[in-house]
Image (cartoon, rainbow, N blue to C red; front, side):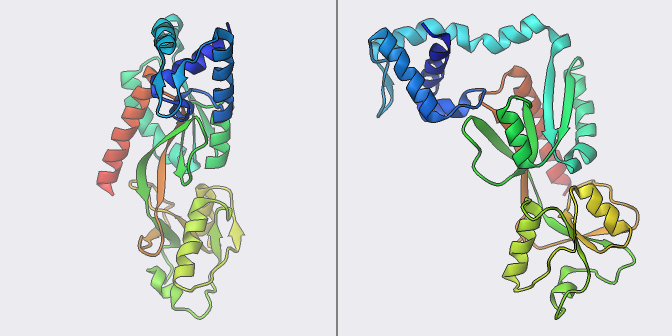
Length: 295
């Protein structure tokens, strides 16, 4: 009997169907693969294990699930027990602004609860981070949420961040309206690559106002936008983050959400979180709530 087929059946039975199973299996696998492999298990056993629509376990399925459930449901907890607290670790990916401005303070609080926790950090955009999750190179990603996650990837929104223009403090620009009223915006625009959410949301807002303003300088991170604005290269488009520290000669001008959609920052992970990851997610939600209250 194929143990992997039993594992897939366990998730199908536990979550009430193949679609929900795919969302909770802790590694990337497509729905047809689950369906096909569970069908192979049924063929091997010579019985039907569950009814598809509406979902229900057959008598044979109930008997098999009752037998295998204690083993598969306790795998995560026994793994942590065998590893010991000293071996607990999380691989976390995030954008530059999250790694720089928020995770250091957050990790100090988390370490009080998990003093032996080992953390590995990776920087990237949403597409890169989701790929790393699928390849089992990350346990958790903190990034902009925009689209439906891939099968097996779970997500939760944490905080909405409004778009903001970054300008030099010596600039005579004090609001976006001053720019939109110009016949042609002459100030250079500094932004992330066009495919990134911040840039796309900004261009969508400009389109609503019937304004054209295209990038003069495209950079790879929020940090670089701030640096080039501080050095007089133009006006940057970023997000307004509570408690974020900007260069001394740079200020942020918030843009109205009615015209410029805010970006939603959240967490991504694979399948059902184990005890360690669940505890980390709970702490992350509380930290995001405190941050939002300060906005």
